[in-house]
Image 1 (cartoon, rainbow, N blue to C red):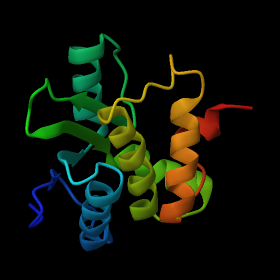
Image 2 (cartoon, one colour; image 1 turned 90 degrees about the vertical axis):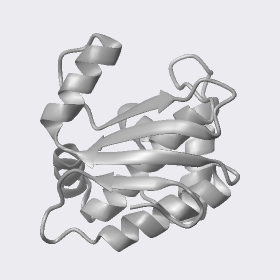
Image 3 (cartoon, rainbow, N blue to C red; image 1 turned 45 degrees about the vertical axis):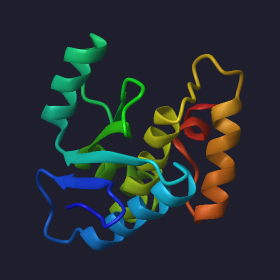
Amino acid sequence: MSSPEGSTVLFRRTPPDFRRHIVERFARRLQKDVAKGRRFNCLLTGDAELRRLNRQFRGMDYPTDVLSFPAAPPAAHLGDLAISLGRARAQARQYGHGIEHEVGILMLHGLLHLVGHDHETDNGAMARAEKRWRTRLGLAAGLIERVRP
């Protein structure tokens, strides 16, 4: 579904109890605040598609929770995200919050990659940015914090 501001959240499949409007509203907020008005696209799908995309674009044959695909400059949009609803549901259960909240955590993490952060090479800059944004947005521990001691 497109927001009036231009970002798109595409739901390949949606669990019956999933509140789409929460995720769509959050995507608009991310676009306004984190992306500074620049649009992005987000696909919410299953593990099989994330595994295929991970294998095709990163050479890694396993499903993951979020993938980021930055647009080549000078594109009008930042790029695309893909999020596994299966992984989001499992992680939401593991960390004790709702699936929509977990999708928000994954969407923020992916968007930070689209705006140029890379936690594997930036000496903690992305982790600091993710923590700052999570606090502002009212989100629980982010992906980087979960894997760091």
